[in-house]
Length: 149
Image (cartoon, rainbow, N blue to C red; front, side, top):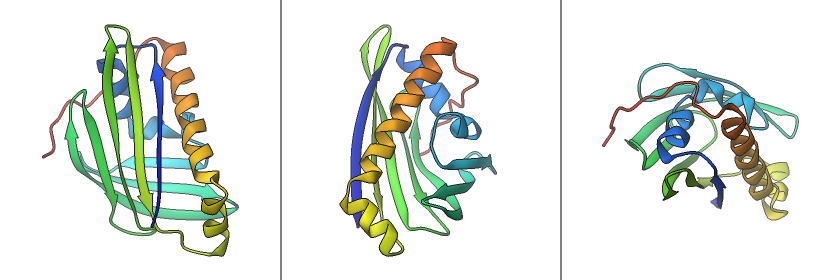
């Protein structure tokens, strides 16, 4: 099993950062390789990704979600992975967003990429693009405030 932990500080209130992160269908705007995300239910999503020239489709379930604190998920089909995104209020106008993710590389190409830390760089790049996306807008595109225990 491979893992990655990356974080970034964004210059928006914790509510704004959290609300935007719950808008899964907007992920292709800032996540490299994410072609499409469809929200099927409050806790179920369908993903289409393209990584290293390989396309993957999978479903993921939100396993835990607490407004302004965390969103955790686990794949239910396709590549085996799980993770959590946490939101930490640094001030009234700044939030630390931390992504922790575990996954099982499926082939030699993915294993080599993990060994060379490509996954760490990709997650950090996604966080930097999230920062640009939310700070340039100044407001979230929506938000889901439900609680999943």
